[in-house]
Length: 335
Ligand code: AHG
Ligand code: MN
Ligand code: MN
Image 1 (cartoon, rainbow, N blue to C red):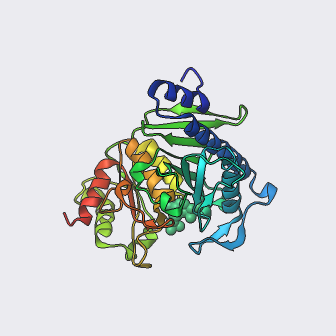
Image 2 (image 1 turned 45 degrees about the vertical axis):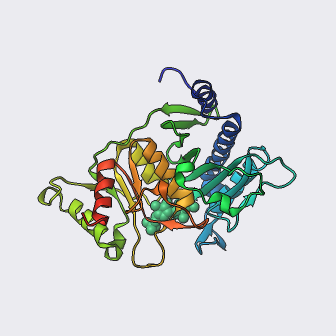
Image 3 (image 1 turned 90 degrees about the vertical axis):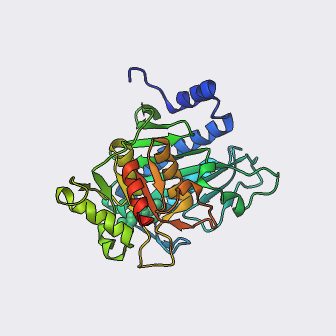
């Protein structure tokens, strides 16, 4: 790309040309990007500032919180509550929604986030990230409630993530394709690196935590077993496997070179639909993947068509290259 286009310029030009980013949404996205910059800074310092390790608390889902989970959550809340663009926020790390305090004006958007995805990778210096999803508050002039957050993923108006890896990369959709920006630390700005990101429809790479194999349902076992048989099996080709254990990094790889990502239901905790969260992980990632020409299902249905029933609801996730996700979804239907 000969000319450097900043995130700000990209958003302004999108609004001018397509009218799909109203100024409040632009402010919101810029504020999220700014918060991610500051999380990236904290992540990159690691042990130098003593922010690694556990915080000594658990979140609402009973998971041990890392110090960085809490720091990232606070950074996102503080950055977003005063701008007048939001009505409320919800986070994987908070039991209840966070309504914008009375001392600030309330806007019309709702922001949901997984402040730090890939917590188990924080202390081992492996890529982690922030995932976010934006909805409009339903009409009606009522005080914002938890119910307002329970919208289907297809109602999202923006979604994205920021990956803290060898580079810090912000990936975004507002419903007109997927764009990627990399943080130029000297300039302090996100610079456009890729537009119209496309996930190849075919792939020979799958991502799943294989250690759970004995707990999976039959259709997942069948799909993975056929991949493992390679050229000698029914697929007639060899497959490679990758599992970073940070969804944000696994999805980034799939947006970059294709692949299929799976975190299915398993019988260790049969009452849970899956491990990943519908609102903070599956919806935003599902929409990004669809916007890049891929597919995202829970094995039965399109993720974006699921009606959420609770803030911290979990879901099975199959997403990525179209032909592979279609296949594993077909296996669930017994076809
Ligand atoms: P989080 O750190 O936000 O709780 O999410 C972790 C998720 C996801 O990023 C990843 O795909 C998955 O957990 C890894 O799970 P396993 O450790 O079971 O492989
Ligand atoms: Mn996560
Ligand atoms: Mn998290």
